[in-house]
Amino acid sequence: MKKTTKLTALFFAALLASYSVSSCGSAEKTDKNDTTDAVSVPETTAAVTEPALSDDLPEMDFGGYEFQILSSQTTSQHAITAINEQTGDVLNDAMYNRTRAVEEKYNIVFLDDYLPGDAWVANDVFANSVKAGDSAYDLAMLLERGAFSMTHEGYFLDFSTVENVNLSKPYWNQNINETINLSDAVYMTYGSAQLCLYDLTFVLLFNQKMIGDLGLENPFDLVLDGTWTFDKMYEMGKAAVKDVDGDGKWGERDIYALEGANNSLSMSYLASARQRTIEKNGSDIEICLLTNPLIEEIFTRIMDICHEPGYCYQKPLHQDTYFHVGQALFADHTFYSIIGLRDMEDDFGIIPFPKYTQDQEDYGVFLSAGTRTMVVPTTAAKPELSGAVLETLHYLSYEDVMPAYYEVTLKEKVSRDSVSSQMLDLIMDSIYYDLGMTMFNDYIKDPIFTTLFNANRDAYVSTVNKRMKAIESAIADAQSRNQ
Image (cartoon, rainbow, N blue to C red; front, side, top):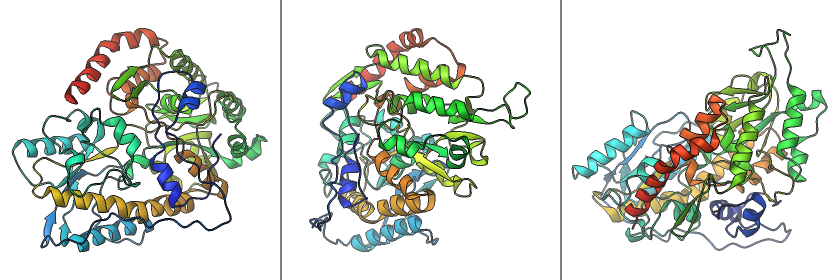
């Protein structure tokens, strides 16, 4: 198991490189062959002198140009880039200061980038604007799978040709950007300015009081010594299940082992076993749904466990029903949704979902679909300014906003103890990106895993076979667009 150390600038470089891609196979083989994992930061008492990081861009005067980013507000992630008001919140004000710094450096004024409506509305507004030849937008934050379907159709500039953008800098997420762009062209990007990437990372919470009251092993210790497994979590969860009112039914007075989102829980377990539904190796894309038997095995097991009477309460995504009132031992949450538990009376711990078996080398963490990706419209009035703004936004986010988000908002405001703080480092270092759960979400995650899980249907192979033609067609279409 990887060991993590106290967060430093080096850690962020490692964090942004931690999304790994490999071929279909077992968890053990995947881990041993995985050469793109984050670099560990060695513990040392000696001072380490790091070269100063910069965006390497000079100040430029654009004469008060009104800069417009297109985005849509959400209740599940940070999707607004230009923060124009201070609130006293550390994260908000770090983003506000970033906005002011970019404005001053380039003599521009950020317009509000909020668009009423959901993410699909923003995608449609963007597409219609570009089709009309409108130069209203200088940058856009678009729903990732919507943008993915628009590549090579004349909507986006290739970032590798945009002046003032240097995608080799550590504040850009090179690994994930290489995964989502299927050719040498780079039409979509992720980096430090997109907190939504971290907002939709799924973690497991446990009620520390219930652990103590039940005399159970400390999950923190199990994680750190590498023995936090599916079997161990199941055993501990069963100890918590209780029909409090004795009516033989499971309702609002009873105690559950796990409270989990009904459209993400099984995916968290698949990622924690370090299994992907789609593997990308260079330009080759392999569908692993049937060729890797572990996927079906793990999914079937999770279906059986989570549909045991009293074991799992299935909740809507990003909500909490029983965990915050002490009626569930475990709960899945995103980093963003954890913020809603700040007033929870019982202390809770934050850990990754368990390994499938103890032989598995590393933990795996699920990153959900729904994030926003950055694009530059082909109709941008000043593409060189769009590039400069984007580069500086990511640089300043790396230097100031990400530390505020991670160290202050998560570690200090949300995490209830120093060990949970250490767990956050480990979790961020274990994110396991899967195209089938993100860009091809509408062909794999929702119609197969979410549908079967919610219906408790043991029909994995037949469902995959029914969906395979659509999946293959979607992948072929994506590849043809990127030739």
